Length: 264
Image 1 (cartoon, rainbow, N blue to C red):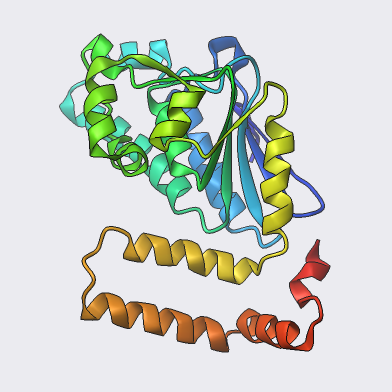
Image 2 (cartoon, rainbow, N blue to C red):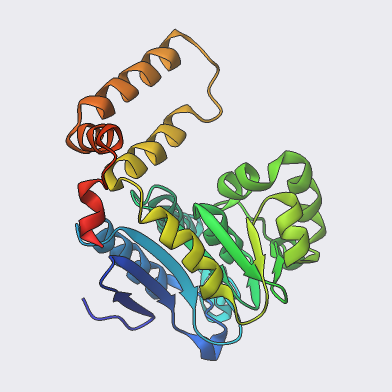
């Protein structure tokens, strides 16, 4: 597919970079950009050559959230049309959250509104020192509804109570402190920080990484029960007898590199 609102590249290691590319409007997203992002994520998830995904942005800011013209159009739509619009955004968040391979968000400049949701949906988030964040919806009479499950999971109920209702802008250091991002990079060193994670993860079994992500989604926030215990025992048994599980164990015991390292 042609990319109008994004740039997509895949390097020889299988690291895909999906770059938001509307710098003239601070990478604000509308229904067209959301649709493109949904399709790109689907294509990359189904591409066997892709081992991980970097989410980045061109220009001074990661994303200003919803495009002003899109918001204006939503104000003129009825309830059903607004729900359909919201369902598309929900599909985007869900698809990024459940992306089967590792995802890393690189946050430069401002990340406002729905953009905070994109950050929260990624496995790893790195922000520049000068980056800033804001859940600004209540400032204009709205709420961060669609992104709330992902943001609340990242920062917890207590911090959500503050930032959802104050709409205050907070720094990269605060984002690190409350759990929205994992690391703060010196300005201009986002990619260098990401490379440390990329290099490490390329040593790991791609199948095991995917299974580990699925395990987190299946187990997180569930009460420890017989069903949960059964799921975990089945999950480890399945990975032990899988092709990469067998290869990894054999390579470890034989003190040799596993076969998947040859894919780099």
